[in-house]
Image (cartoon, rainbow, N blue to C red; front, side):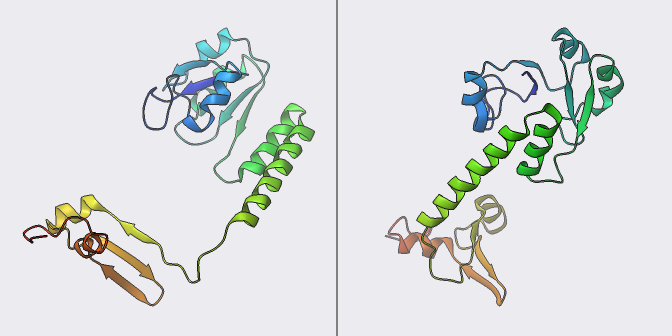
Length: 179
């Protein structure tokens, strides 16, 4: 198996090969190769003499524009993965490659691990409201620590103040205040 494309290496989402960090270790263990960074290259793909080529239908990793070229190299399938779960995609890829059993086993293993994790998680008292803090908005709009933290619930919006949160956490006082 060859991972043909990669993103820019050594950034917050990619390793030194340009593979996404969440599967970087597996890619290295399996000695996957990247053929190019960024723009798809039909020549680089052809040099590998593949048995099958899969193209993403959408997204930044799509080589759809090269379909005609790639389809002269090997059977080429267009896969749309933005409209389905990873389980559906894995099932589809298992069917295409003759690995239906392995795909089903992977999904079953994940489901088992998920069920075990759910049993270990203790939920907090309900209902729960998400808290979102956007420091850049706060600093540019308010020039103060007194805004920018808010929660949103069905009943309305509750505004908390960053300065008040900091004081409650026994951190720095608001600018201009003495400790």
